[in-house]
Length: 319
Image (cartoon, rainbow, N blue to C red; front, side):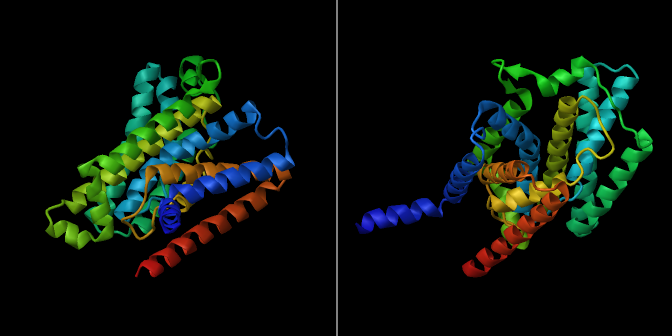
């Protein structure tokens, strides 16, 4: 009997298990309110909406593990879509336009990393400033009207259906989540980020190039945000100035709900992905219950505060 109790305790210590139980419970409750909740179309729509934030959450989890944060990711996503649109407007091939969109995110992420690691600006302040700069540039470049329509050759990236049923962004997000979940768990190189987040000074004394790794983490975050933006713009068939707005809050909330700590050193990709699904279920619940869009933002903010409070209490318990 004691062995069974011990086994159950160990199972519930696995961060993903409680998250899965929350998802199952939420699914049952939502199905009770709407029998069509489990219809393939609704589930597909839920995972499609979550896929863009799931891609971003991979980068955000790495940053949180490193002990940093990035508030500019939503703006980077919007900016990458605009860059793609501008490149297509001047006649660049779709492949080149996509590369340029991704490169824009990589460059912004690299600059964020240098501001934090080299100049020693707090990541919250540095990326908040970058968020404002990039969002302003979006309005300048689009004159506030965006890029309303992209060619079908580009839109297929966000709309192609695998097996005639599953859209490409879902496949991309799942593949990336699986690949990086394995790398974060098994790769010694990725373990360095956990050491940095746990104790940067100790990591530095052990030979880890802390500043270089932080720049890598921010650059990777920029790449993931840009990829999310490229997929989102293709899915929407255009880029508007507000695209990507507030995505950073959802991604941070999902990552913290998934077990990533705001103090660094803790986090898993699988946990963050489940956190993204939970956030998607919350949005779905809002829609089913007819909650006003303005209240949705308020409740999302409350969820973020509760998640951070839970993280603080969890860290205090460990101390």
